[in-house]
Length: 423
Image (cartoon, rainbow, N blue to C red; front, side, top):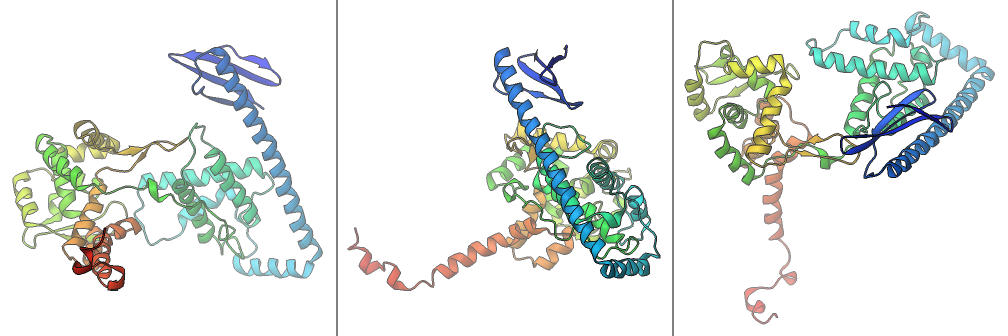
């Protein structure tokens, strides 16, 4: 696809299959994507021009913000310059904290990893993810604020600039047409904030620059949902004909375990005498003891084999490719049962709202419904976030509402004698 020079921009529009796609460069950076609702080359060129103008406006706006940040930083530096006593006090305090040593941003994460922590067994996947978050922040700082290369030089305005970039453009090191969700942005910020918190004394920080940074609010409507009664009935009938999903949903319904914990459950973790599952959870490394329901006990007896794992096939697949298990569950729910499992927010990736993890919420809801104390439920599932607690309490709230409604004064209601005259 040849590139055309036009008004200071390299640009192209080409038909790929049934859709027009654009690709052009602005200031040496490539941009590409789908020409939405464009059926002719003229429409595609107009769409491309619109995108190009939008990017140009963002570019100038970014330059303006950068100048404002620089001006604000200059003001702060001038304040320090003319207040030598305060500056001397701060520098002396930093010297007391860290002996006069600085922590470079490029070396901060390695120093952070060397720190002792409560959770010693962080999964390799989580470790890589957190390191990628820090790497993205580091790349943003090196590109946007090249003079800031030490931890103690980072101010709230730099952190706010990074959050603003995440909201508008996504990760700095990632080239994607999708926007980041608020939950992801908060997770990235929390991870970076944790590095500053752990290295606060090493860098001689008087405060964490991330403490007062305002983050986007979470969108509750996009969180994982519970299965409805009708959907549970579909699952109950469907697993009779799906040998792969049957043990996953059966064990999840009776234990509240996550997908990974079910797939990698070992026979040695099952106490046949005490009728308990004793396991260290994959996600948070918490040691839990889960009572085995009598029907699940019989099911385990039927599953018994000479392998290390309760579900050998699932363990083999999960340990080599965890997403394969999730995809097969999605296929079962969507294609076989017709259950909607994802939503597609505008300009965002598809978000999963129903999967095997939803069975944890089902477990919490019905545990509360039959009167199992929340402390017992929490000890079984190992952790209850706000959403799980809400499902547990939901049935209680409904019953309480009915009881309290009966207390309304009769003046507001129609008794049987008066009601017969009402129209």
